[in-house]
Image 1 (tube, helix red, strand yellow):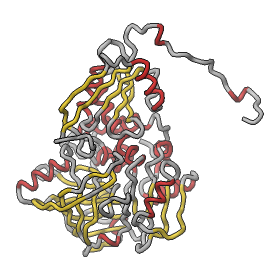
Image 2 (tube, rainbow, N blue to C red):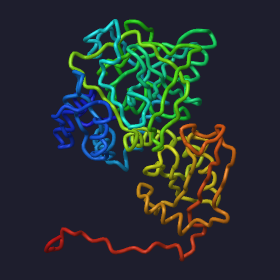
Image 3 (cartoon, rainbow, N blue to C red):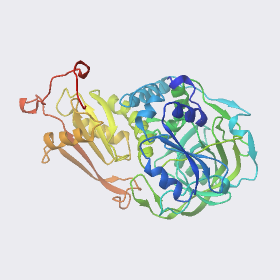
Image 4 (cartoon, helix red, strand yellow):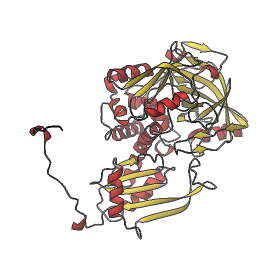
Length: 455
């Protein structure tokens, strides 16, 4: 894959690229990382990225908004936003066929400075929403190794700062990291990990790939390598057997402790609600390595999570859904609903294929609550067009497929006892297509051929 200018491999190069493309705001005033920083960022959500140059009580700047503009994300790969999921899907597909191994180094940018006595409070970790239980890491990629096979896994977790060398984190029940942890805990052992902050887009995307698209037997760093077009470089850690990303800004080494749970939360999740405070898993830091002049990276739970997770999750699911239902042409998480509402576009050849697509989507993505299937004349990236298709093509008496008592996503407030009702929405035109469903069209014109006054 071709990254823009083929050199977007660290946060510094992203900042330069954003600035060159007039897509970066620099905040010169000092800001407080407790609520104020995120409050400012929220005002610019979806537009230009923001670099906070002076963070009160800390020596490192903070970058936010790297992933909240889908058009800019697409530029990183020299494509447009509509084609970005297909670029990522092709990368995942190629990775499955020909995995690329990472390169392991002893030294790299991310261990220019080694802090053998870690103090996490020195990092400019923001306190995001007013009701959050504390300061949170939100964009750092966790690398772990399978306790039995040594295969690496990448994942992203919210991690709440609780002490100089301690954080509590959320593990997803269906994730590979939870699988690793349970097997390590059963042996009475901690699970060693590295927490990599300030990594490039391909590594972030690899960390967000759903388990259904990445076999537990395969090293997910290969996805990042494929998207980069070159092997990912890792560096050996100082205190754990798991490597870190060589071009990261910070690497926090440590372990998830067995048999210990401590309070985590509340946290303003992607749902727009606060996740409850509960006893969760505990991470103990054993070292911090960093660049000489690092930039800390954080994301808001909103458009950025929707883009960072939604695009790659949809890309990973697309190939699996299409392998089961070849008529499927594209998938997209409906804006504002990530990860709960997936829109599937289908070039329906046989009546009933749309229902197979609904079931294939549920199999491919464990977290989705609703699947809406539409025809190819519907713009799945346009919420209004999808809504129009549902309103004019869905017969509510027969085209709403309910699946009660399904396993739910615990972050969603509608889940009770880990269960909810999933729903499929058939918003396709019945075959053979009746004339009454023919869409009205206007003539295509080239506006450059006309003169306008005041346009």
